[in-house]
Every structure is written in C-alpha cells, then in structure tokens.
Image (tube, rainbow, N blue to C red; front, side, top):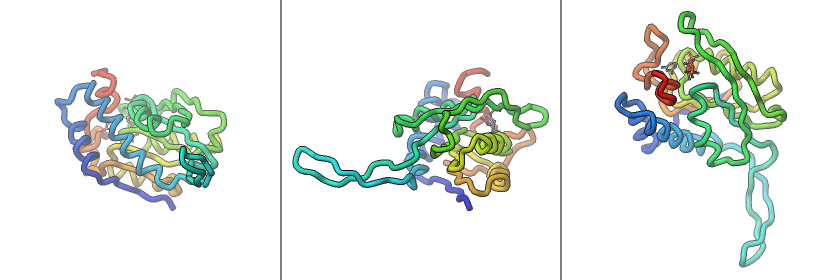
Length: 209
Ligand code: PRP
Ligand code: URA
C-alpha cells in the first residue's frame, strides 16, 4: 500500500509561501519551484536502495554506500512538471528524463494526452513523476497508468500542492504509489483550481498569461 507524505520543513513552507504569492514574477517563481523540488527530492528518495562498495581515501581503504541496482527516471507531466526537473537532476545527475504531455480539457477537466517519450529501460528504473499541481488527480493518474503500461512498476509521485480529491483519485486508481506533497490544500473551486493553491502553474512558469 502506498503512503502519502506531506513534507513539513521550514524552508519548504517559506519558499512555498513565496511561490503562492501572486506578486512573485516568473523568474523567481521558476527558481523557487526548482529549489522546493530539490528539497522535496531529498525526502522522496529516502528509501532508494544502497549497496556497499570499497573505495580508497587518501588515507586508507574503506567501505561506503552508493546507490544500488535500479537507476532513477524523472518524468515531468508537461508543461508545468518541467519546472521541477532541474531541482531533482541536480541531486541525481545520472537520472534519465521521460516526458508525458497531458493537458486538462477546460470544459470536462479530463486530461488529454498529446506526447509520451520515455527512457527505453523505464521498466528497470525507479520513476519519479513530477507535476506541481495535483488538482482533480486525473492527469497524474493517467500518467501513472501510461507508465505502468510501458512496464514501470516502481513509481512515486511528487507534487508541490495537492487537493484532498486529487490525492484520493490517485490512491483509488493506484493504491501502490507513494505520493509526496509539500502542501495538502483545502479544496478545488468550481473551475477545478486548487484553493488557496498558486493559480495556473504552467502559465506562471512560462509567462503564458
Ligand atoms: C495542470 C497541472 C497538472 C494538471 C492538474 O496542467 O500542471 O498537470 O493541470 O490538474 P488535474 O489534477 O485536475 O488533472 P494543465 O492541464 O493546465 O497543462 P499545462 O501544464 O500545460 O499548463
Ligand atoms: N492546474 C493548475 O495549474 N492549477 C490548479 O490549481 C489546478 C490545475
């Protein structure tokens, strides 16, 4: 059974408050999303497996731990998920990056797929799906379904802000997935936006509105 973790940390709370602020411009918004993603990745990768290796320091031989077995793939849900990628690959430079393009139909709020390009060995990788917003949960749930169809089995989801509905949708469709969130907000409004949220993540990242 997957777990839901709301990552509580003073630095994350502080930066998330600045991200939410409507007066924060695109440059700062992008930098802050990257920074929070890096802080979250530290927590979301806590259970990656390690193995013991022997190395030699300038002083002597010693045994240390390095990441073991499967490697990591980061899969942003386009567009807004792109804003979280750099923060994670700065920590895990060997990670490969897949892309899943989904947009929410404005009327139905249902996700529409328009792009999917994944690392060939996705089935062998620990996959971190990233998207700043988990609103109705439709986009994240569909992205995870797609990844499972391509053979991925070890998948975790990392979002900055989630609604309780969004979490429930993903948990119902994918009970095996671990979900990491910086803040679980109050609710969705009548347009499917998270309240209080941060507005439209894609538009704020890319300045499209
Ligand atoms: C936003 C967001 C998520 C989705 C969340 O993307 O980045 O992908 O909405 O909503 P849901 O949980 O109700 O599916 P959007 O569809 O606006 O596309 P964009 O990133 O290209 O702006
Ligand atoms: N997508 C966003 O960018 N923001 C929301 O609040 C909901 C969906």
